[in-house]
Length: 295
Ligand SMILES: Nc1nc2c(ncn2[C@@H]2O[C@H](COP(=O)(O)OP(=O)(O)OP(=O)(O)O)[C@@H](O)[C@H]2O)c(=O)[nH]1
Ligand SMILES: [Mg+2]
Image (cartoon, rainbow, N blue to C red):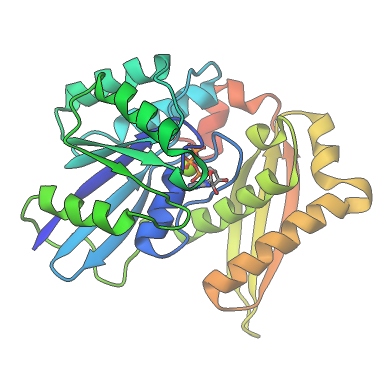
């Protein structure tokens, strides 16, 4: 049996969460067209006949100013500790910017094998892909290089096959029916946060946090969920609620459909909006909202 942890790191929006979802075959980590979607270290377990790959999804690495952004980058860097392999994911057409010096420095510190994974080849010309590969090859000694589409799965099977070759002999870390380590309350909160991202514009997604405060199965089989969307300003509260409550209703409907699919039970979703003045700027507020660096 071979097993190990494989961290997926890279800039925001390159497709890290899409890959973990595709590889595991379930939606484990939320995906949106907006950068800086992932805020947590999220494990996704891929079981093969004689191997278990534990993928680690991470927030995108970027130049961070606010406490929230610094926290996200720290989660990404911390996620490299003790892993067996790293995929550095870039988007075809990407150039190596300053973020990469920071990423490479941390990869060297961990002294772990790294694959360069060039994603989104379905929407880029071969010439662009070649350029990106040439540019990144100069900067780091990658063990392997793959060109994939995490969206349609192109070359993902080859990537996984090679990954197993690099993993050490090891135990099965998770039971075969486990696909993630995300607790239910967080999984639900993340679905809601995804719907906030998909329905709202501008800075609002980045100023929103979601916490599930209660999950209770009622006698009639209906699951009652109470969740709070925290925003950073009073004016944002009105936008999330929308005219005559239209926006919050839409977010709730979109989220409820997906939560029901996950739980395979009818769900009553009670959503509230709360103002946590300027929360992304303050560490203490971040902690209260569940943004804590993992051990
Ligand atoms: N065309 C295409 N789009 C992709 C591919 N992979 C991901 N995307 C899209 O790119 C966007 C970002 O994908 P995510 O998986 O959320 O990216 P991420 O790297 O996890 O982003 P952060 O969590 O913000 O760091 C989404 O709209 C995806 O549908 C791909 O292979 N091809
Ligand atoms: Mg992500």
